[in-house]
Amino acid sequence: MSIATQTLDGVYGRSAAGVRARLERASGAGWEPVSEGETDIDGNVKEWTDEFMERGLYRLVLATDHYFAGLGMTTSYPEVTVMFRMHDERMPYHVQVVLAPHSYSTCFGVRG
Image 1 (cartoon, rainbow, N blue to C red):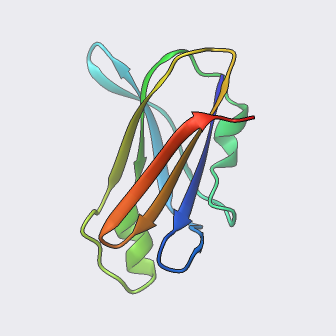
Image 2 (image 1 turned 90 degrees about the vertical axis):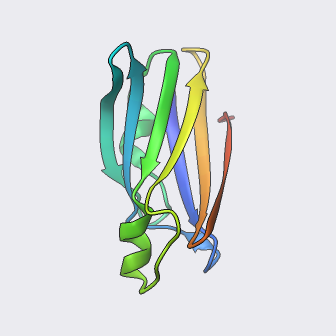
């Protein structure tokens, strides 16, 4: 099982490059870090697509304050967290997040 993520800029209608991202997995003690990265020119964190991940509850944390500050904007959401469950170890999953300074939307599914 792997996770692909894509971050899009809802202001300019393009991929959001340079967004700091962190992937964490739920444990009995809270949240354990799995991996960190930064979105590339296509808005993806490529390193995560080849990592094996177990079934369980995960969360993707995006540093939107840093991203929008680099564009000269302020944001209402300095950090966006998307929590999701990976059900099947054989399936590749995909999380897509569209960011704007005062809103965001997300979609989760299986990559085909």
